[in-house]
Amino acid sequence: MDKAHSGDDVVLSLDEVFALSKSVLVAAGLTEAQAAPLARVLTEGQRDECHSHGLFRLPGCVQTIHHPRFNRDAVPDVTDTTAAVTRVDAQFGFSLPALEAAMPRFVEKARAIGISVLAINNCFHITALWPEIERLTAQGLVAIAMTPSHSWVAPAGGTKGALGTNPIAFGWPREGQEPYVFDFATSAIARGDISLHKMAGKPLKEGWAFDADGNPTTSAAAALEGAMLTFGGHKGSALSTMIELLAGPLIADMTSLESMDFDDGLKAAPCHGEILIAFDPAILGGGSRDNQASSERLFSAIADQGARLPSTRRYAARARSLANGVHVPRHLYEQIMALPRAG
Ligand code: NDP
Image 1 (tube, rainbow, N blue to C red):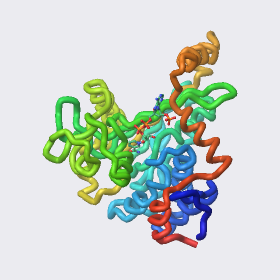
Image 2 (tube, rainbow, N blue to C red; image 1 turned 120 degrees about the horizontal axis):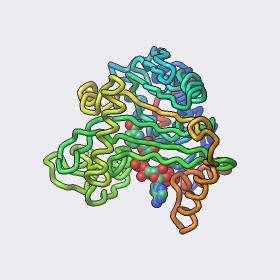
Image 3 (cartoon, rainbow, N blue to C red; image 1 turned 90 degrees about the vertical axis):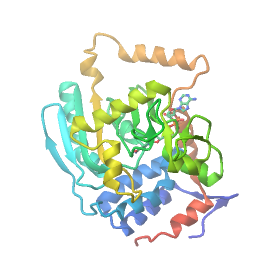
C-alpha cells in the first residue's frame, strides 16, 4: 500500500483504518462478527486522537488473540437475570462482541424501569470505555462503565501492584450537542501511555511510577517492570478499589490480581469483567424539573470561566479526522503492515 504521507506520518482515511484493523484481526483468527466491533472502536480511538487506544492497540490485540486462553470461537451468551440486570458471558473472547450482543436488552431495561445494569463476564478487555458510553448517551441515557485490568498499580502508601489501571467513564446526554463524557484510568497515567513514552524516549512525570524494587522512577521502561501509582493519592486508591469490587467480586468475576494470575506471564490484555450502569433521565427526573436546563447551567459555569469540559479535545480531533483523515506514525504503520492481513 503506497499511502499519502505528511512528514513522518502516514495519512489514512477512517475507512482505511477500519479495513486495516479488521483484516489484521481476521487474519489473527477472529470471525468477522468478532473483529468488526473491535475494529470500529480502534478506528474511533484513532479518529479522536486517543493514541494509546487507536491503531497502537492492534498489535496487542493480535498478541491477546494468540493467548492460549483466548477463545477465537467465542459466541457471547446473554442472560436476562432480572428486570434491571442483564449478564453476558463473553466466553473468553473480547468484551466488545459481548457488549454488542447485550446492548439491545440493556437499553430496553433502562427505558422500561429507569435503571439497567449490565455485567459482562469472562472478557479480554483492551479498549477505551468512552465509545460504549457514547453509544448510550446517543440513546438519551446517562451511563457509567468500569473495569479492572492487571495489578500494575500500587495502592496509596504502598509500592507493589495490587490494583489495576481501572478506568471509569461517565456520560451525560445533551440536547443538540455532543454529550458530556469523561473516561480515565484511575492510575496516574494509562499503561498504554507509558508504552508511548517508552517508544518516544520521554521520561515520565515524578510521582507516576515505581521501579521493580519499589523506588520512585521516571523511566518508562523501569515503570513497565515495576508499579504505577493511582491519581489523587488515597482518593484515587479508594476509587480504584471500588472499581475492583464493583466490576470484580460483585459480578462474580476476577480482580486485577486474579487477572494477572490468569495471564500466567504471557502479557496479553487483561481478562476479567466489566460493569455498565445506564439511567433513563426521563424516568428518574420524572419530568418535575428541566434536567437539561440545570445541567447546561452547570456546564456553562465550568466552560465560561475558561475551564474545558472533558471530551472537547476529542470532539475537536474527531472533526479534524472526519475532514482530513488520521495521521499514523510511520513506524507504527510499518509495524502493522508487517502483520498478517486477511483478503
Ligand atoms: P486522560 O488523562 O487522557 O483523559 C481523561 C479524561 O479527562 C478524558 O475524558 C479527557 O478528555 C479529560 N481531560 C483531560 N485533560 C483535561 C482537562 N485539562 N480538562 C478537562 N478534561 C480533561 O485519560 P487516561 O490516560 O487516564 O485514560 C486514557 C484511556 O485509557 C481511557 O479512554 C480509558 O478507558 C483507557 N483505559 C482502558 C483500560 C482497559 O483496561 N480497557 C485500562 C486503563 C485505561 P479528552 O479526551 O477530551 O482530552
